[in-house]
Image 1 (spheres, rainbow, N blue to C red):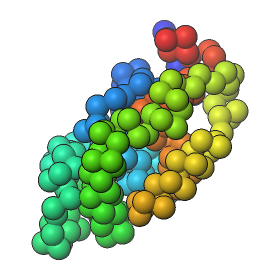
Image 2: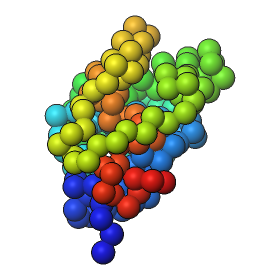
Image 3: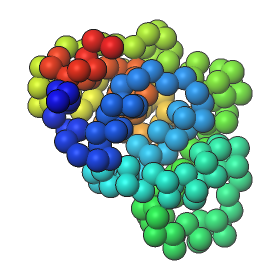
Image 4: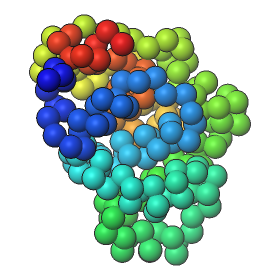
Length: 184
């Protein structure tokens, strides 16, 4: 049996851990997906979001930022009735707002990938934590990323959310040293 990070005990966490978490991601559509999902997760468990991921995919046009940026009040009303996602008006409006700003960053930097990976000099940070309880919830870099995103008008991008985003997209490798993915 494979030794995994402590939090990856059951589905859908095991599959997410083994196939995505901590793997460097450079596709802008995937980066937008994680930006939306991490914001939706605020105050909830990641398992809750993973179980609704397909619902989010359908509700937010397969995470196409250009389409989401054009959502109207009618879209918001429909999303507030959509039981396949977290029906929180602030989070829904934030996703639409963040889509517009995501497109601005793409225009300014050529891609969101170029922008976000610049915070780690385009190279993943590999931490060396032995147990899950050793992992931080923020870092100096997640604080800077959060400040910059907020300055640009993004919502639901506090330092903890930004650190979780960095972990999800592989900017930081926080697989514990006993995890079978630690050395990869």
